[in-house]
Image (tube, rainbow, N blue to C red; front, side):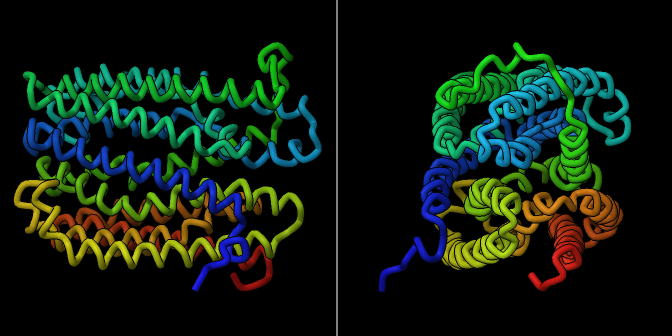
Length: 430
């Protein structure tokens, strides 16, 4: 029986999804292999220290370095529809200026707060050099506006190509670590260099897109700040800051309440669970501009249907992945991590949580497009406070599973409240 994809889903969405999914899926496999290689070369403690140093930098990058892609996706479609090139240039200019200013602020704070963070989380002072080196990646992380441009102009294939090429070359350098004398510094340098290479490629692609769309001389017009754009940008990045405990602080919490060697174990579990994210993230990145455009056109029911279809496809894919990995784990688990079979219960538990989490991932773009982000800010703030309060108790009782249970509580609260806000806004059931 043939499936009418045109009827089920917009053709453009399917095409973009396939491109991004294949590229990100391949990149994800390489990232998981890289992590396994680093564990074998450095051991659990050494690889955990590298991951901890990277996580430290990402905390400050997430808090202080604004990424303007959500604002670009929200504000540009209406002016693309009306072909108002001047307004498009203004918003892109504001996005780039914010990216530059906040990256410098983030870099400064990252290096200023090292001593305080090390005291709070009782970290090894040997990590300071690793952090100092990797912190330079922040100065090149100016890609928020560029990513927004790539998505809003429907050029997803370029970001996918970049991910594949960069991760392939990174994998080659990770394999080389088996044959040369490699230390933690080697892996930090590899991560830094290829993060910069990736960002340079994104800038080149952005310039190409703007040229073919005849959007030029972005910085030759006088800057005129748009209060609504700035406010929305602030809210979106504040939301990212609120999400830091779950996304970037978890390794620090594992180090404090379980033990540093379990950071690499958790990272492997996280990467395997990320298989589900590789269908959810491309879909939500593709659908967010579609939802934003439909909301701009007044098509509320069309945007809701996209979210419902997204839920169905992710659940279907997630269940198939869960069954496949559960049946075949003896083949792959010990390749990824030594004595891996003793962690299979943790992996499957985390995978079930990820299926639940990402099946509702289309709700957040709808919240953004409906202008309900200020409510979401309070929701996530409360949810993350609950997460931080749960971890000391649950990690002590259930070990790594305690971290996963804490995340389930946090995510469940956010999803329930977001749906409640949407229902209240639209006066109908989602």
